[in-house]
Image (cartoon, rainbow, N blue to C red; front, side, top):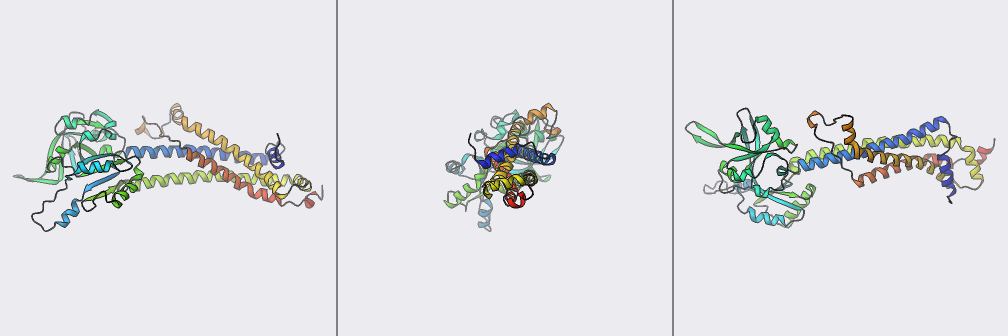
Length: 429
């Protein structure tokens, strides 16, 4: 097979066994460093992608991506001082608004709800929660419905004054399915002969869910009509619509479209997104992911620049051969190509083996951890495996970046080899 002379000589140099032991040592560890760096970066990025996906599913699966709520505060301000003004937070035309919003791009689901801060009390404990009133018929695709460990959301419709709560909250209250708890609204009060008391009502536990997030011990669900009765509202008491999108990160574009095209009357409705409550958390996760990219990329860079040391020593060792090649007519560009090819072959071996090793470990990491009895997530997560998500674009980026670092590392030694003066080198030969 015909090969260009520079490529042929560079390939021979990369396979040469006549190098000094120290040069071979440096070359081996430069390849090993690139190999380990690429493999580590693939594994860590896959785990970070998996965690990010789990967070999006478990947190943004519960937190509404966009909320359209009745602008109660603005209406209240506009009617301030009017004794006859009867301002209500209830969204009277939510059915019409729901149909309009379902027709918008990226919107997968629109569900009505009401919410209020509340206290939940059992015979053993008392805890503050956020009470949400929902209509179970619209919540079939809700992540809560998919993670019920006892009972069902349907019990909110079939049984009056029933609630659904998280497993960790049920554990704190020491209640189980069928037990009764008391819901109290500290912001709502009734006047009795005993004085001013918060609105309260006993509810039966009709379902328990376990999503595996902080929502499990901070949220309770009731039927909207019973929530409305507690809040002294008429009908179903719906005060807002929550929108779930095909991707939560499309929320800013959707809100911009709703406001720009005046699909939602912002004088009567206010629009908010998940960024306001969870944006800082996901920004921290993204920053952590970027820092892991940077740290492991530096490992690859250090390993790649070991190629510089090895090639510089090879250039010094091959001075005579470089002089002979120059006298035979090989130009400076050809000399540079020889050593660039030699360095790139070393880098290529590290990238190829590292990529294969990284992919194999990523696909089998949970099995290996189970085999060695290791539990990285801690004792509280004994039943959970590390979330892994391989993204092709990330793998391609890692491979190309490692190859580029290897290429840059060959430039100085190759340039130094090309400046060799044949007359000076061969004078004493």
